[in-house]
Length: 281
Image 1 (cartoon, rainbow, N blue to C red):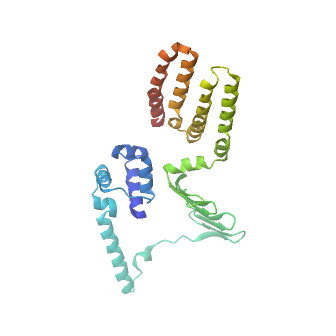
Image 2 (cartoon, rainbow, N blue to C red):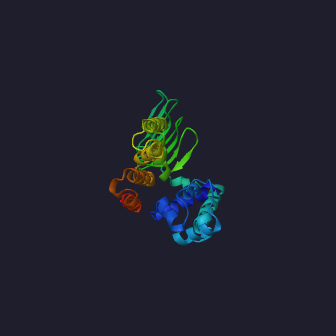
Image 3 (tube, helix red, strand yellow):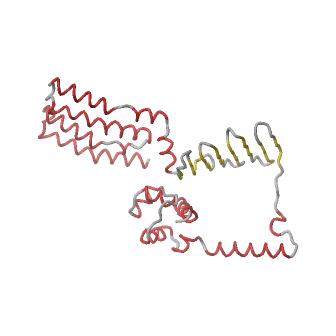
C-alpha cells in the first residue's frame, strides 16, 4: 500500500475521533494491524476495506484514491495555470504574498527568521530545525526525524530508521528511556534462581515442592516494568500473580487452602475491568 493511502486511512480515523485500539475493536482486527496500515507496512484486505469504507461513510474509490472532485479541481487549476503562463500572465502565483526574511545569520550555521515568525535553523550539531509561527515543528538530525503539530508529536523516526505514527510514539519513547532500559537489564532471573536454590536446600516452607514458584517472579517483574513505563496496567501479568497466590494458599493452608483458594481467580476479570475503566478515563 502506498503512503498516500496510508495517510488517508490515518486522516479518516482522526476525523472520526477514533484511537487505533477503538478502530481495531470496531472492525475486528488487532491494533498492530491498524498501525501497520497507517505506516504503509501492510494493506487491509478487501473485507477490511469494505468495513472501513462503511465506517467512514465513503466509497472504496474515495478511501483508496481520495475524492475525485478534489483531483478534478486540482487538474483544472494546473491546466489554468499552464494556460496563463503560455499567455504571458503571472498565473495564480502573481497575487501571492511572499514574506521577507527579517533576520539572517550565518554564525554557527544558517539562521533565517521571517517577519511572520517562521524560523529555520541549520547546522552540523543540531541538524535542520523548522519552526512555524503556529507552533508546528520539523526536526531532521542524527537522532532521526521528528514532526510535531501544535506541540503534539505526529511522526517520529529514530536513528535506526523505525517510523512511528502517533499512538506508537509514546510506546517507543518509553522503550528507549534509560530508566526503562536499566530496569529491564536487571538480572531478575538470577535473583529467582538464587531464591529457588536457597529455598529448596533450606527445606523451609515445603522446600523444593514450592520453591519453584520463585521463577514466577520473572514474568511478574518484566510485565510490571512495562505496565509502569507505558502506563498500561493491563500489561501486568496479573493471572500469573493470581496463580502464585493460589499455589501459596494451597500449600500453606491459608484461607481454606486448596478448597477455597480458587476464589482468587475470580479477581482476574475484576482486575481487567478496572484496567478498562482506567484506560477509558
